[in-house]
Image (cartoon, one colour):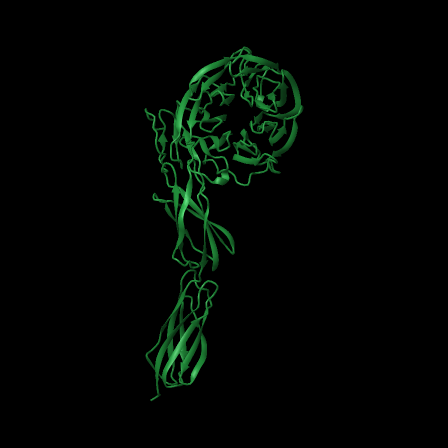
Length: 578
């Protein structure tokens, strides 16, 4: 990785921009600003949990040592990535953590207990004894005013054992009756405080892991929807690394190492109608986190080299924004995002990412400041077409102008368009907007009649979407033309040949065309045998003129669904036979 000794700030480009001293490379950003990145080397050789406390602007990080004799600490950092304190355990190693929804208590897994710390004073206030030591590690969550944790009653082969789900309140422990082979992971969100999402990891005992959602508002957990992903042949099973609830609790995002990022409806765990774009080729999902205010989602991955390990984008994939991509590729900064290693500040102004090296023996805390400010955008002026009258089967340009507030984007933004006609909707290729805001969307209309073009700018990391604009046009038939070649003079009652060519604009003319032919002379107008048009558009007309004087031959094409009618005439002077 190319490195720089100074912090660089400025516009993101398609070329990689290395951000000062940190191993974070911006790969391809639609945003106007590159992200800012501070890095702290974490004093841990294993990673269990990270909790973001926005009320006090602190980040808590714990390891996964799983020892009853080795006493470890919760490491406390500020929002600038500086270590400001630590909470040493008096009961072996620390592990999973959770923050009360009001931010007043930090719950920490220690050996044989769950301890509560006051987040103002860092004093340990209470603890709840556990049934097991915790040497297989614990996950901790807070929902429904209670603390939830997993436990495994063994000290070896932890990933293959049965996990049990416990709850505690006011220092009293209760077994919920819910369990699952392998490990269980949690997701909660303060805006829907009673929702507890649980996911099972892939293991020899759980080859088709489940996701489920509990209502934790009562004295006992009430299970809601549940889902598994393997098909009848056992393929497609979930390989869970992390899960996260959206700010409003309506969506559940799942980091699935086998699939990528799944986006589900929390109400029934069905697939959301619009999914996130796939992770870069070679990247496997490892983490996912929504910003609490609901605007953004961060997706972490395990990848090598310059392949992106982190993508930041609007939380709603239907908004169509391109992700801001980062690659961690430095020996001093980590090489990938650790599982469950992402968390946002409450206002979405900072993303915290725990990265690890390839061997998983060293860890770093990154404080990333993605562009938070968003500016308005709008279409200005009237839309126009070139040519002025659209023709079926011929190129059509829809010209317009997009105005963007705020800093100019480093890379061109794109406008998309949809054509609606009698055949329904057709999405057109997006086009780049020129520096002066002008653009031209290209299309080839396929039907004659009314068509409506709707133009959209879906926004990017720094710009809000523009209100759609529409233009209704009438698509005309393509023109045709007939060219005739005839002798200037002919002899009465002797063979006369006229040649010609039928040409048409737009789509190719249909095969099997015949042209109507009329002869007008001193005796009147009569219809001759139709002329067949060859594949190259040529045709021949043969006649025996029966009257002297000027004879006019008129050839007519009746047109078709896509082509207009056309006619052509030629005059021949007919002489008497000698």
